[in-house]
Image 1 (cartoon, rainbow, N blue to C red):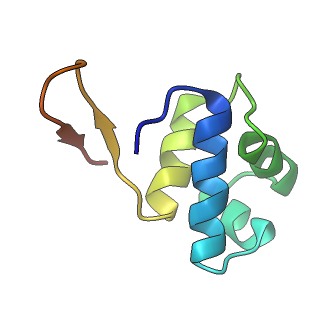
Image 2 (image 1 turned 90 degrees about the vertical axis):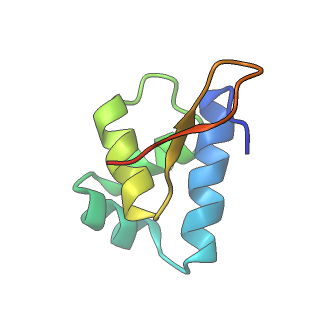
Amino acid sequence: MEIRTPKALGALIRARRRELKLGQEVLAARVGVSRPWLSAVERGKPTAEIGLLLRTLTALGLTLDVRVEGDAPSMVTP
């Protein structure tokens, strides 16, 4: 999946959380953030701290894939 905006990243996080049947409180506790922070991220908060976003992706079993347009994907894992 290609993510280009904070809103798209938030939608991905929300969808994966729901797929795993996790409430916001449960995921927030796993990541070490507040439920309001997670809620704001899921709505597309444009100023979320990258370290916390990466911890959130890890808690959801997601991996960040960064690439130069036109190149093959390069996987980055925590």
